Amino acid sequence: MSVERKLIQHLMGKAGFGATPEELDKYILQGYDGVVESILNPIQSNTLPEDVIYRYHVDIAESRLPTPTAAKWMYRLVTTDSPLEEKIALFWHGLFASNFADVQQMTMLYEQVDMFRKLGLGNFRDLLLELSKDTAMSQMLDNVDNHADAINENWGRELLELFSMGIGNYTEDDVKEASRAFTGWTRDNIDYAPFWPYGRVGWHHKFDSNDHDYNQKTFLGETGEFDGDQIVDIIVKQKATAEFISTRLYQYFCSDEIDSEGKLAINEMMEAYFQSGYEIRSVLRSLFKSEYFKSDKCRSSKVKSPIELVVGTVRISEAYSIPTLAIKDLVDQATFMGQTLFQPPSVEGWHEGVEWIDSGTLIERVNFASSEISNLEKPGVRKLISRVKSDISTSTSNKEILDICSEIIGCNLSDNTRGFLLDSIDNSPNNNQKIDEHIGQVLGFIAATKEYQLV
Image (cartoon, rainbow, N blue to C red; front, side, top):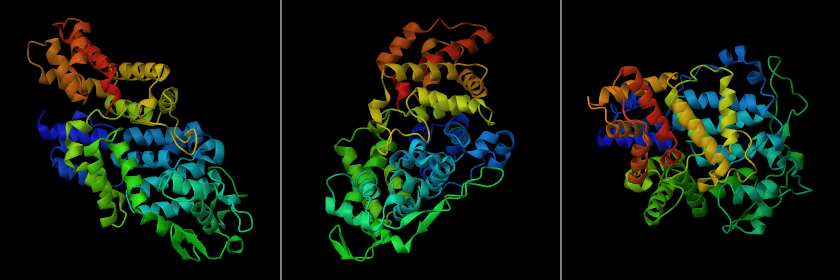
């Protein structure tokens, strides 16, 4: 495999959910920088239109419960041709965490994710302002109960602590003043709640001028008769905000840990944040084109989340091109591994990195990936086997098969793991049918390694 092909494969593992050999064949024609620009500027996805899905899955159309709605998003994740668009939505879903237990309206939660999808690569000010008006978030963090004569600080506090600046970069007075500025930002039309096909839950943002605190406020050193818009304006221009967002993006798209060179990459991302006027697309462009991102230090440096593991594996197997009921099984598989779409455990989102792994979740991860990627009935697996067979020589040695298989699915095996697998794999057969099964076995073994858990 050429150096550039490996680099693009690395990019798609980080910025998407991996890439099949056929996808890499297309990407290589664009070159690395061309692929970066194409994923940062996604076109409309060719995923099956939702109205077609609704004809066959009324439970998904109604969006009453978490699992069917999660299945709708899962289908989009495993079939999209705009992977960064979905991955950035997943990033914001974890950072700006809202859950069904607190909101109790799946339609609003799905619309929130759609907002992340549409604005997630754009201007951070626009995204933060829309989040401030989002009805699911207003319900989640009690801004619907934030009144001029009875301040509720929940939204104001989490806006600063978890969503933009981080602890230590603001005072308790800043929390109070921000909360005052968002009084009267509530939701409307809460009594109209029909389900498809008769209508949609109709919550929408409302500014109640009779419930807003118009008095002077002092926030982060600035004084004025601020409302929520001005609070967001002040937040996004802070150095602490640039560092917070750049760091979270770095940890999500590059590495769980930050070394000295990683810190330099984050500094460059912060510069891009300000130079572009707070554009997330520019921040990610800075990361993806940095030498650090392209280096070995940024490879196999992040534990895959359950969603990343499930989606990446089934995109290889290509077994879910149409939205059958089996899509719900994928939601369940991710749940068994510790992550359920639309149900983060708290407003803090999921604890990531090595915290994804324990004795129970590791078994689920290994069993799912190994069985999925070694199943010869899966169309993508059959394509992989054909590709491997076309690349191997007549000797068909286990060493050669293992190297080609691991390379083709982008799994960087350590020397110790590689040696262990060579000792464990059966002798390579000679007849064609048996060689298919043998390659499937090798693929399954690779999917069971610790390296497959990393990206």
